[in-house]
Image (cartoon, rainbow, N blue to C red):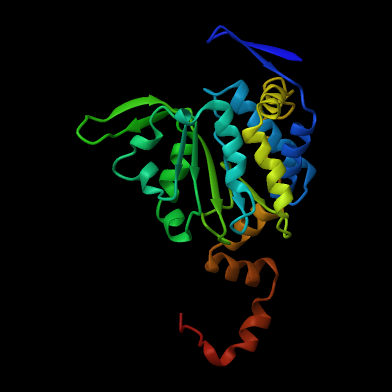
Amino acid sequence: MNQRKKKDLNITIHYKYDPTAVEVFRKHLSHLTDHDEASIEYLMSYFADIIQNPSKPPGIAILIKSPQGYGKDMTIDIVEKMISSAYLCRTEDIKDVLGSFNTPIKDKIICVINELQGKDGWEYKDKLKGIITSNTLNINEKGIKHYKQSNNLRFFIFSNRMNPIEISQDDRRFVVFKSSFRKPKPEYFNELGKLITNKDKLYTLYNHLKHYQIKINLRQNRPKTKAHETMRVANISSLYRFVNHLFINNTMDEYFKKHKNEYRNHKA
């Protein structure tokens, strides 16, 4: 029987250590990252950092892409059970976070944007990039003069879209993961759900993350995932692609010879 004392509440929590809790959680992170070890380690460290340093976000947002029903939300359900729903904002409308009024993110440390659509992601791309790394938040509540507070937010963006946000060529703010192709069976989600409902499993995982040794810099050591590179390449301007084709690949003569009837030389 393990005992952990919460100093702020001055109470002792009794629970039975359950090693399977950590195994189940790590297995789920493996599923969400298509079984990439560097990505699993990054997410374990990221979640541990939430528990260990809640007021010091790394300025990195997590984007996870998968079809619906693959367990993205359950990951946050587990973390929410650890830190309390009072510190978590969930929304399917990015305007709740970046629109005229943003009360839902007041005093929060996690913000989850669910099923982000490409239209919204691109419309608010600059504001989203800004708020991820900003040290302060401008909170604007209805009927109250706007005010500033420290920005403790970490963003999780979940989507089943191919390109829900812009990943620029010099991106420094996002880590992108794409889930495994295979959808787990119901038994898998039953075991995952026990991390929420079973006190022994929940506190075992909580204390594992609380004492987890974070060996990487979350800002500087982002895993170079195929999902991130695919989005980065997809967002290259068509003009740059054309120029690259002509000059970098040295195909100008070939191109204009092939399309000679479509162009004419300027007299100058």
